[in-house]
Image 1: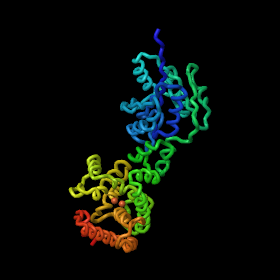
Image 2: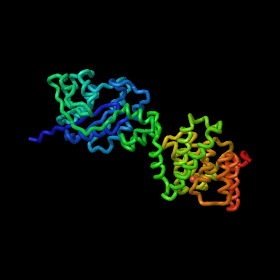
Image 3: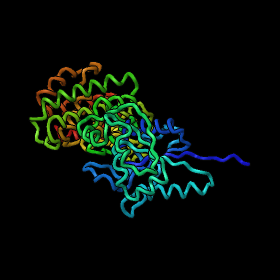
Image 4: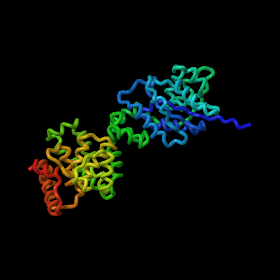
Length: 404
Ligand SMILES: [Fe+2]
Ligand SMILES: [Fe+2]
């Protein structure tokens, strides 16, 4: 007689909007405690249980976030069954039927567990086709903070089977997390790569943590260049405080604090591709569709502003103001906005700059006459290039003409 095989499959559904540490812990504990052969995580398409929150991510984004969040749990996989269902709301009973049908084709006996947190657990009897759910699965309740594991169970019909999966307490919910993300928080309550995806795609109105951005940006620098980036950020912040209120162009940003954040972000990322060779930079141009002229394509030193801007935009979700300040920090251009001038000057005069002729004069001028300082630094660049027999870039020449 062949040995009879029963496979244990856990099904873990939810909005996962976004998936956070408690979700992942619940999944991990369920796999271990129930000795699951597989755990299928099913992000909902349109959830019948929760109204769409104001700053929700799309189903496609939640699917990607789940793949990242649950990606390193052994035997876990993420299913797009509900996300692909564009016909309307997805019901757990229907999803269970699809999974059972698929799995039973393999000819093995199945033991299905429906993994759920306390919020879902206590409302289960009210779900669509609850009878089918209770008859076809064992309800596995991951006990959440402040709730007893058996709470809600008395309402279950007599034939329902339920087990408790104990998990350590983590005080986090998706709604709290969404609110925290919009306030610069949320980091540490989710997988770092989940946070990176949220920042990259600017989901949930996220205001990225500057400390996190700085750490990620510095990973792209040669160690000795990190001091320069830090110096630029410090100088840019000082220049913002000096010039924000005095400039009409600054009105693009909502307020001074927001403007400062943008300047800091530009400073952190402005030399993100500086260490790359020309071929690597040209590959980035190809990848991100960067338009570079012939001169820029010949010199990595000219190109790094544009490639860093492309990375800042594509990988860190920065807005066009920040991307522009990064893109033109090397060549400058005519009629720069305030952020671009600040980035250009901060790069020139930041505190760790090796001394050069005119530096102390330029540092003073930067706080007295902004356009004068821009013009003075452009002239210094032009003199230096002339000395070294290098042609001035077209953008730089136009800027000299504009600010003269
Ligand atoms: Fe640079
Ligand atoms: Fe720089």
